[in-house]
Amino acid sequence: MGFQRDGRELLVAIVKATFRMPSGQGEAATVHDEQQSLVRADEFVDEPGLSAPLRETDFAHMKPACDVLLLGHARAPGGGMARRLVAGLRVGTMSKQFTVVGDRQWRKSLLGIVSASEAVPFAAMSVGYERAFGGIDNTTLARTGRADTFIANPAGRGYWRHTDHIDGQPLPNTEETARPVSQHDGDYRPMALTPVGRHWAPRHRYAGTYDDRWLDEQAPFWPDDFDERYFQAAPADQVIAHPQGGEEVVLQHLTADGLRAFQLPRLAMPVTFVPHRGRDVTRDAVLDTIVLEPDQERFTLTWRASIALGKSVFDVKETITGEMTQAWHRARRFPDKTYHRSLADAVAAKRARARR
Image (cartoon, rainbow, N blue to C red; front, side):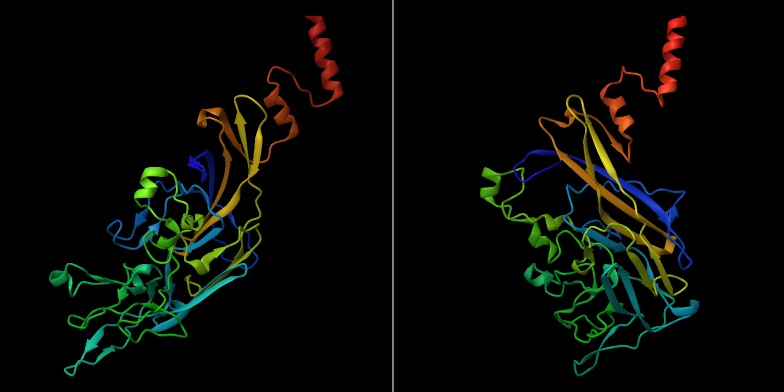
């Protein structure tokens, strides 16, 4: 269930399918034996609401565009070790690359100069927001009751406004290739491929204003300044137009073999809403979420379709997913009528009834 801006209820149909990630050039994706179930509540790397999001619930009212997400690790070439490498993801015309670095620490000299230690070689490194630039500096919390938060990624590492306790603290493991992290209080862009927190910048600005006026005049519906982009969980540079199928997916240093390329399956996903009264309504569900999981050699696609309800959800008898023939639709509308595959079958049936 969902609702429109005017409060009218929507019946939202969600279709989710998991596929094996092709391993060879030109190989087509096939349906996975183990299908991923709908995510009913947001999931996190650690403590809910404080750590980085891992998966976001599938029950969004709508998504104006398509989220592209990747849950996994950057991997050193050839199964070896690396101090740094460039990881990349491309889906259709969307392309994103960044540098992945081994573990480092901030070092503070006796003169108060802060610098980064040398990176430790790694075999695999998470590309989630918990490893990206950000964090919360609690240096002044006890004295002022307030902490300094990097609002674009409070769950990250490396951000310190003050240097009192910075010595030995970790740096981020991901960074923009053209702008390496060198300042503890910089305004660096967090580099990750996983969901953005709902209360992080810039996503939180799309949620709208929930003030006394909203409570008095609009609750529980969305405020006037609510933006549907709030439902997009992916980083802004990973939000694309709804794919049609056939788009090429390329993973660089995100799989054990170093480079993986395949195409999204071409699938039409019509959803038919069958009311208790009136005509069936068919909507073409749009692909609005792509979750790549190269560590598990799988990816999951989610489609969404909706209709506005007249009175309540009980207006709709059932929903049917997939292509249905005209004969199927006729049989649904006239369930007591008998249909035959050919004229000969109809004549034979009539003669059989006459002999009874």
